[in-house]
Length: 503
Image 1 (cartoon, rainbow, N blue to C red):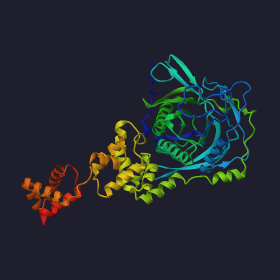
Image 2 (tube, helix red, strand yellow):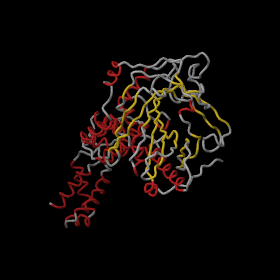
Image 3 (cartoon, helix red, strand yellow):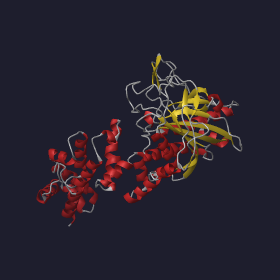
Image 4 (cartoon, rainbow, N blue to C red):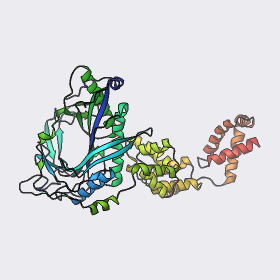
């Protein structure tokens, strides 16, 4: 059994007293094109291994690549959204290195001539502070295949009985977004890293260029970290934690590497420039391989592809397709919905902005949409280890349910029962309510009779209310609701009880 052991680390507060962190983030994004970067193979996730391959993406002799035009346009749109300059002329290069899951033994990428460069992205932290992250470049390349290590307990090659390779992913279009060194973040460095990836993910989703599903690997972050002693001007030696695939892990990995680097430096050691693996279960990184420099990859221009030279007319046309920036859109929606900062943050953390917008558009009030999606539905999804999208509930269903409550047909308790029926596939809210016989009693005479009976059955409580202890009415409300089998408006019951006992 292979285990991961933690290196020595320095407490975070001590790290900040002695060192200034420097980060560099490299985010790989799989584009949502129908076909691969240089061939016509499909890109759908989850197909049987090695069923989406051809001589081009397998690197067979004589096979010639052709650039995916949609991928090029997607890369340009990403660059424009990141405030980058678009190259008038660029080309692909061969990046030479050996991995078992890279069938050609080189990766077709871009080296010194990226398609977009010199941009920035403003990221907002939880307390509202905005931090600008400078973008060095975003370039096009192709993804590798995927190795599956069978046996052992970690899923890694160490301790595995054997390995398998699936080349379906080989050749899928990638855009790699590379930041300039990020300095001046201090104690907030891990938070800035997380916020950058989160903001970038929202932007890419708004652009509709990728599904940005980090759990499926369609968006991955390589986090470079180094430390500079306080007062120093020379950057420290960096390490690169590869393929971190969640926002939480990005933050944790940066923090851990800061503490590990500090312990090494405090002990008189030196940092090895290397790639490292992040272990989600233990919260540590372990050594991968020495980090190669550009010269080690023996870059040279790809001889089988012509240069890419996007016209100014194309760039101008693509600029008109850019969506409203996600941050501006959220502020506009928050204002329109009347949410507090905390309420909007909860909606964002739940990933419910779009679904609430659809629910409001379907006729629900913003308050009700937030209540159901981030409350009842989110609670049930969390308890069952699911996503709200796994349920049979649509924005139209929630809007219909809200309408039934507003119209006085259902109270909150009955609405929750109706929602359970919708989740269980019993039909629309109206159909569920009809089938279960759920409807507030509209007969005032029956309700008044129940109120009078409860007052007669509970004279001691009734006397407390008459003596001015109005809060005691809650016990009587419960008795009336029980007598009405929950099919009464609690606010109306309270009004009747107070009226009877205080007038």
